[in-house]
Length: 77
Length: 149
Image (cartoon, rainbow over all chains, first blue to last red; front, side, top):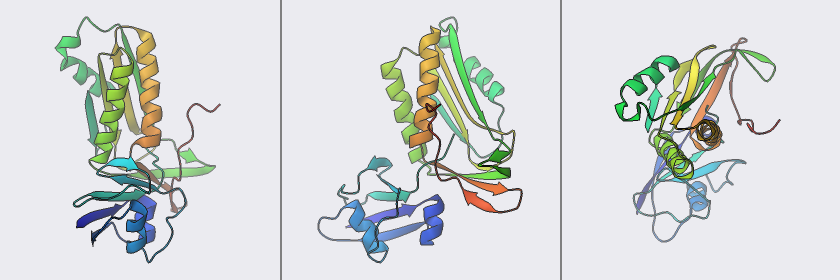
């Protein structure tokens, strides 16, 4: 299965890229996606996650073709 | 409802006028229009700020705003909502956000304006990076709670 992963704002700068493509098999959660793409590291503090542009918890399971996003607290308005 | 994400400066008063002119069904029905305009300051956290770059997550921004407005329309009696938000380079005195709410009576117009703004501040994926007078750049790390005194 294949997913697209996107990073925004200060997190995009700290990870040094704006997106990843990831292939996987089996059942994996949002936090597993982060770990696989970021050398097994823990999610930085206060980071938020979305799947297909809806907020999700880190234990949310991802599906084929999902778009997963990680980003810091929002600061619009 | 209308949601506009703009890369260039906008005039909130012109946006309101255009929206009303393009909504003939609403004419004569609204007794209250509540308007919130958020404008860029030239200071933040004790520093002089000379500009800002606003980044967003295209698609999720519109989706979250649409969810927020739909929830408001279900909870309160309102006729229509216009939200305009800037992205890109913004300078002091530039309008950043406009929330305009039309309803028959003032109570719902006031309440929905506040509801949309507070939800936008906490859920809609925009991020501000400030450029200080000293040329230092820094990300704004969080929004303040608008209900906190």
